[in-house]
Image (cartoon, rainbow, N blue to C red; front, side, top):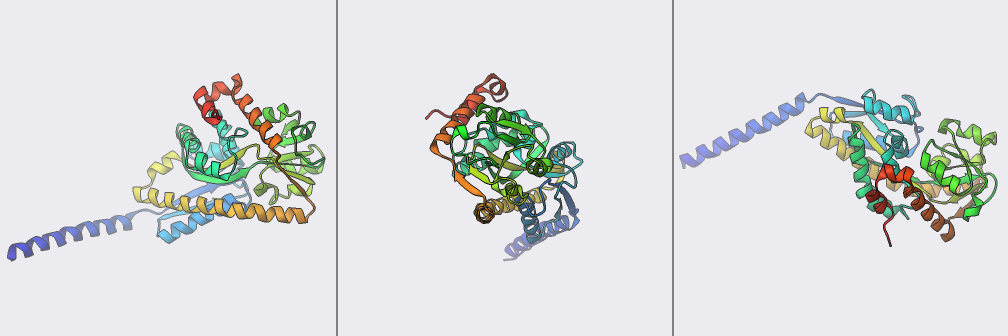
Length: 335
């Protein structure tokens, strides 16, 4: 009996030491502030996602806080990517296309016709081979990808006419970001693509420098671009995600507990942002319709033309050399 009692006391003593040690370690864990840069305005879904992640961190009682700087306060998307790479900025909320400016091989993720719908996006990008390759390419450049915000499918808006078939795009002066494949893509359709910075787009539309532009509804509405363009087409020629990138050294400086808490918080924020966007897109379309915007959906004819053009570009020497034949085969698998 005495032996059993002694054994029990030893177990209790050891357990107490372990528990005390864990409590003491948690108490000594230094608070960490992670500075986040985002070029999008404060009401943009990117920023909402970060705020939801911050709420989750508080709920978890984490020692991590997120210091969010929207509206380009710390720089535009290119400056943000570069800052996170260098470590002068901890975290960035940016479009994958902006990261591709530093990692050209990443452009494969946005190529025309790769994703038919949001189910494809979830299966292939967020939870599939596309996202895994994006994470791998970013890691090689010192960027830890914690998750993906939804940046939506890209649409076309313009002030000239409805776009429902390939020939309707011909001759349109369209603003595009400084992304090579988008310039090449619209040239294939006979458009006149013009790279213009996002911050200069409203003025370019208002002054008629360009007839229209291509962006998702989650950007067209909050930035007010619809005020200058009467026509909007759900062309879905490209899908864009927004990787949440963290400086790798910053990630490695966190304790295992902090890493787990941060990942849990980011997962919570991105999931909520994706669900929010599905409702948000419908809401802003209704608001733009009420303002007189004329909407049209992509026709099967246009959809096939987009897929054909995407395959053509990906298989050209310019992009094939960057992506590799194995990736191109995954992008456009034989049916």
